[in-house]
Length: 374
Ligand code: GLN
Image (cartoon, rainbow, N blue to C red; front, side, top):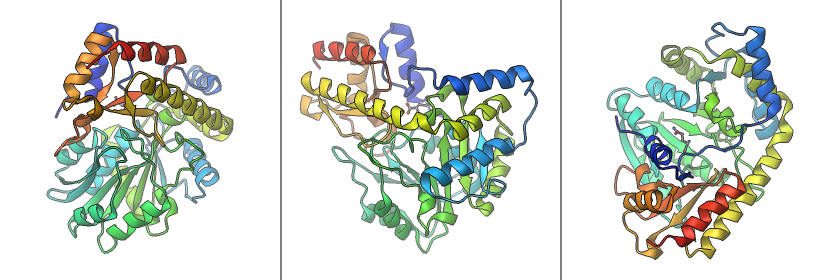
């Protein structure tokens, strides 16, 4: 398996002391009330294996959260599972749903875990390719990639790294492209609460034609700025969930109970966290994007997820790997080359920056970027 680009770029940041806008994580610790709950649960002695599917309080909290926020009805006993991070959920889904030779449709640029896991599951990837500046997902391209042999379609919505967010019409077009196959949609919605400009996230589970053929994956890490806790939230119809649970039992079996209890508390009691989080991230997006423009760069639009992409083509850059290395070593700012998210025919002229950082860190990075000439 390849070395993940996040590990490589974070290592460069550690080794050189450069500002790390590469790997996506906020530089704040998340809500104090939730962290206190975790500490209390540890002191209280929640130390042994919790139930394989997740603690009942958290499964109930997940179902009620999505009912409140996204208008979907889920049975917590049959349709909800907790995993050790969304990445485990993706692995569990792909291992459960793919057999040797089954086709899996992946949309490039794709989150870097998808392809190695599809291959490890024996799946045969088929790619839909998006390109800057608007990364449009054409229904025709989806139709062309989906065949009677397709067993899985993976959609990341909002999409990391592009920052695109897909709405109801896009999901309906996807449902239409999947009609007549028995493919399952693995809907990676970890950025569901990180959407901007008043945009409301539309879950694939709310599209009737997708309701019972979707595995929806969420992340407490992205919801509450707790990325290191590795709590994944999985929702799917009972027949799919039963298959995923088989996978999960042999991957991690379960997830730390103290952290599950704290996330359950957060989902039940911290609804007030989300609006300020979105507003603050949107303000940071604008601050960083305005600063980039002032420094002579061409930022692309971000509708969701806390990443801003810079189009390097106007600067004549056609090797994003070399650009990102030079930016790290010479200017002291770590980003991620977007070609790392492609397998075939990569776009080599875009760099991704994480803006979920303190203002002073973003301003410092902008100063360094303004002095840097590719
Ligand atoms: N989701 C994070 C990102 O896109 C990285 C997670 C990881 O390092 N595996 O940057």
